Length: 571
Image 1 (tube, rainbow, N blue to C red):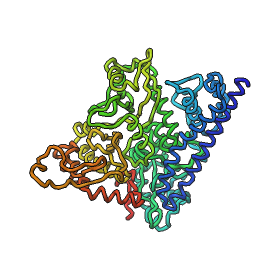
Image 2: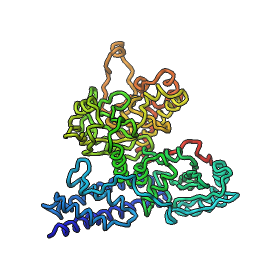
Image 3: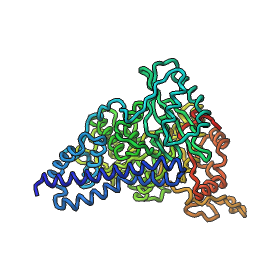
């Protein structure tokens, strides 16, 4: 059989498996409206995990099929170069061409174990991505705004008939929505609302996403719906970029939203959240792998030519498990697993990787940073000072090596850079630090409600986003909350027990004593008092056992992705 014929069979196999992935992805996504209307929250979380793991499962199957198909020609670069050309013709003109290219690359990297990029057999884009036209009629519905604007908003809400908002609820909320839109819009006319036709579902929430266009002004518009036992209601209205960016945060699980052209949808979202990286937007709508591809291309563009903004060790206290470095001009950090862990850590490399996989699969509610796993990264030596390279090869020599003029990193996690909470509390204003201390407690509680116990609650393991949100990023001791055993410290029976340096009582591996938390948090006296004034219940066993009981009963708590000021306060 000729090389071309092998290539055609290879390309056809990969294309067929990609179409299978897309079909199954859409099938899972299509269940979201029914789940929302039936209040099937447990199934929502299960299908979130199912869809998240779908890509890797199908790439696994594709790799197996390709190895069986090509046999001894599986590593023949000529076959793969021709397969890429054949595959490109098959996907040309398709709405999901970029995703199809990412899928092809995933298969080749599995087969070849590629270090860096192989331009002969992979799809490579060195530019900023395709120029996207304005939204098509298939993506958006348009509502001209006239005075008064309430009728247009009423029509817009009525058009989303997948979710049935009761007429009484509509009448109650309509004036409040119109008032806030009027206030934001001012006297800008003419104006129109452009709403994405499909609803964004996530957890117990449904979100109507669009924008108000008035001349050169573009105002984000998002309506958050909840389905409570009494029915569907509009809970919140977001009309600013920062608020919407938090709704689409990299600390949350992905939305389930029907889409014919993912690139067009992402382009629309980028127009109302211009500061949010396109990679995060792809991840936010469920295309995590392509989001990772876009992120990698961004990093490659950023490191294409050496500058003075070289890699450096990240700010903050030295980690016991991870080495972390970043670049002054980029908002990502690179985390590597150390070869040896500082005492008293008793983990292993494999366990750390398992912990990161656990976080990847867990339903995230706004407090866990999205971590992208990368293998076989390759950077020019010029990006590393001698001191940094020596540090990395000494502390993470199993992961980092120097080959000629390239630094090869075999396994890394890339995350958005945040300010470590301990540094933030020293450098930010009093108003901002007070807010962060309160949100620190909120973060611990949100994690608990999501069945997460952080393990190590030191300030240095938490960070503050650019929006002032407190998030957690130290995953090596994370455990499901229901596996913890929360206990009250037994009362000492003798003076000797009272004065003992070590606990005189037995402590199991998963035993947790909440009353000890205040000693380990590391807050200043003023911040400790503030923390306890709002979150003293975190130091009581009753809080934790009550949350465990709630989780075991099957109750899933909705954690809103927006601040109180956005709510319409309909109660």
